Length: 269
Image (cartoon, rainbow, N blue to C red):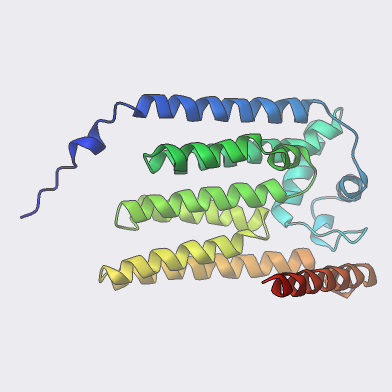
């Protein structure tokens, strides 16, 4: 019978405390950079103002209707923004950007945890440093848009999925964590559905390879429920936006630019 005792190298790594300390320093620097950027309370620019006006002029129920100024955002994210604006009306810039500040930091911690689970320096240090220090991550952690919710949802879902794969089972605690984070993710992030689908298929495939069809069905059933919730919320948030002339023009320009860029790259290749 093969031994189930982990090798000594995995149970005691002399370099582990130094690696954890280095990652912790990077996370701390990243949090401080985000705190400085958020607390500066710079003025809102035009895209942020478009969202802010919808939040100021509408009730929670009114936010279920298509947004003005050709905007679209997840319903859960809009409600969170509206609640904070009501609780902290004296500092609207800080209130509106607080969710992004929180999501940016939680996503940073999740990326650091994913890297540390690999127990090697480069997978831990490089992604953590990139997320902590890269200007775009810092900037969008204080922006009245839902992009940091997308990032945070993806990082947390990936963290849960990798933990389940390492444990060789999709147990009750993994199922509960995936269900809770997945439900919050589809309410706060349009992009989360793609991450849920990818993680869910990876977990179901792993269970099928192990011959555990029941576990695979349980994973896929949960993903199907989350997909149904996502479709309902996504249609609610984006209906009528695609029919507006401004958005059609924007998407035509974006598609044309993407095609031209793709053709140039093919010519280079």
